[in-house]
Amino acid sequence: MSGKTKALKSLLCILSLISLTGCGQSEDNLSNSTALSKDQEFSYWLGTGENVSYYPTYADNPCLKYLTNTKKWGTNQANIKFSFRTPPSGTQTSDIVTMFGTDDLSDIIDFSFYKGQASMEDLYNNNTLLDLTEYVENKMPNYKKWLADHPDIAKYYIDRVGDTKRYMELYSFNDSVVPFWGYCYRRDWLVEYGTNPTTGKAFTGGWQNGKWSDDVVFPSKLTYPKYISDWEWMLDIFKKAVSAKAISDGYPMSLYYTGANPNGDLVSSFGGGGSFFYNDNGTIEVGTTSDNMRVYLTCMNKWYQKGYIDKTYAEHTSDMFYATDSKKIHAGKVGLWYGQSATLDNFLDISEGKEDSAENGYTKGICVFGARQPINDIYGGEENKYKDPNCFYSPSLEGAPIVISSKAKNKDLDALFSFLDYTFSDEGKLLNQYGLSKAQYEETQDSFYTEHKLTDGAYSYVDSLGNSYQEGVSDKKLVKLNPVLSSDTALWSASKMLRTFGRRFVDEGERKFSYTDIYNNALDEWLVFKNSGTLQTSFYGQLKSEDALKFSTFNSAASEFLSKSFPKFISGAVDIASDDNWNSFCTALKKRGLDNVKAALQETMDYLSA
Image 1 (cartoon, rainbow, N blue to C red):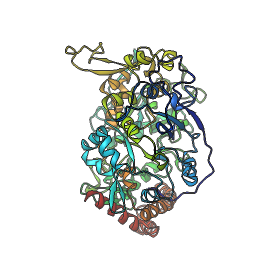
Image 2 (image 1 turned 90 degrees about the vertical axis):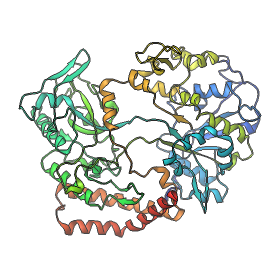
Image 3 (image 1 turned 180 degrees about the horizontal axis):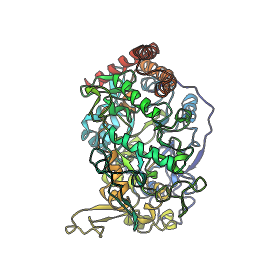
Image 4 (image 1 turned 135 degrees about the vertical axis):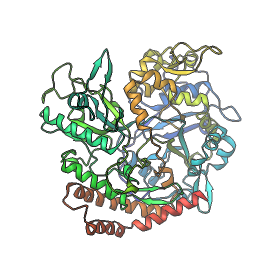
């Protein structure tokens, strides 16, 4: 399924079982309090739990308790319960590898952290995992309906086992998504230091009564940056801002330490992708050795020479692509960056009214907007210009997969799959995404909800104006999150069933009533283009065992090579304009197995498309 890795020593957190008759029963109404047989108790390896300050084990999640305490499952209407095993953060991969290596398997396993050497076919043939096909076909109508409603991607979620296709994994899915991060820029610096590119007049704008307004216009004559030329105009203003504020360690734009994001962000603006991607006819393409990559690097070299890019970007090797040099961004020292939604709007303003300075930071009056992936209108030939980006990081409808180990083969799987399928129902997805309704709270009197003043439920239904929903009268039926939760995302996470298998969605009302205007505008900008070329995790999971090992070996070698090569092109240490230099770079990458990996990916794509 995944590539080769070393089995590491693990730290296991063996957490408590849900007890329907034990501690805490006096605080909640528990309707299913009968003792359960062993075949109705399921262990669950969960890669990520909630903050233990909320509850020590996911068994105490209020939505999970609601389902196990008030409902019965399967043909025999059985009770079931779960115990959870959650490793410490950062040890998930070593823990799961050790679990598989020692055969100390939980019944249900969050498979998103699996990096073992054995392929899915291996795990099937040695009876480590159960074949779930019969249960999906006969016991999971909601899950099957979701796949049927998404035929363009459904092919990725039935596994190749020899010459047969089997459901070996179950994936969580999202009906709709919002991005967690994207390109962000300081709108306030454009107002403070920019001028209208046509008239030369200074811009005006700022914060008034908690709302931002301005008259900023870009060279494209739009109010948002659409083209590379808009970005260069903007970066020049940011360079002036950094200089005017005497920010000695500031810079206009941050860049991922490798020099090119392998997801394809910004690279795709020049007509291709970051690493491997596929085109509309299903042909696998290589981004790293393509002409579009060379044009991208040419652009980055120009920006580096102009002082637009952080001169030390290649040193941030431990930073994630969405949090590069985060400390400086939060101090207000950067003009444009790829960052999280928490850096939008005025969320970074830590000034407390103090003037900008090295001691106070440079965040007074900050206003951060989101920017879409830009379209190249300057560099390269016609094949590189005016192309809509289609390879970049974006949240996928695909969530984390689970597998069922052979340890569960003699348990009440009819009841288990009834439960799992419920999490794909319309009622189930509300529990997964938002939490308990007022009626569900009143049915259980859940102590967690009582303690955190959620007695009106995690959400309510309202019309488009935010008034209470009335059946047959209201124009829309929208979800409005409880204000207690909209102001505390950690509490909200603990109040819903976010971490386990299930279907999720983002209701129109969540964006309308819980997000600021600038936040919503950023999400719209980040969603302008469709990520239609990226190969998802589930695709790589379809590789044959020997091909998965090829890919893993190549990926490791190539990543190290690229992180050294791209920065040399960008800085000018190696001349990107030299055909000899570029051909030498491409040859070196091919020697690491590029063509063999591409062929393996193409074979997998052809198999899935057959």
